[in-house]
Image (cartoon, rainbow, N blue to C red; front, side, top):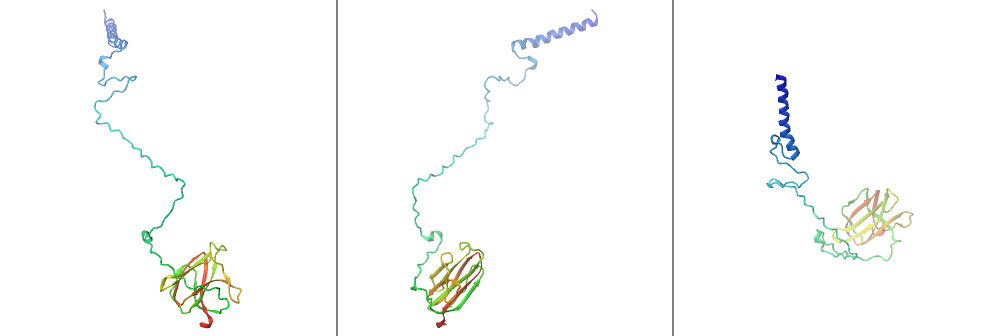
Length: 220
């Protein structure tokens, strides 16, 4: 037998050995000895294995907060009561003193200018002394708009010696009136009582305003 025949014979024996080692396990479902792994086999059709040590497993748990339900109105009208103004750090206002009021506008009395206030913005005036028992405040202004709701003037006439003695005016609530022997129409506020007074003025969309303190001409 020459070398060539020996080589063919050796290859044939090797094939028989390999088939014996691999083919039988494949047919019987056994593991191949020299291909076995240190990791256990996993049966994908069965349940997953449970690990022996669970200490390293920390799943993240998200807690869902249940929202607070919105109160439903029962349809009953609620009564809103009163509290002490000091609850909101508001001073309790004193009761205003109501002085004698005229029965009619003194149309026939001749008046003359005693003092005048002219401005273009809101503000508080300095104190002015009015030494007459009867006097009037004549108000005119030049608005930016023709709408009396948008362009208006508010005035408070306050007694400097008595905080409860004041009179409030708003051009929104009152209409101008004609003046004695004149075609001009102005807002007129009648005042009774001499004293020291100042004016709190609030304007909205006005180009300018004029406030005149008028006193009886015979007494000036």
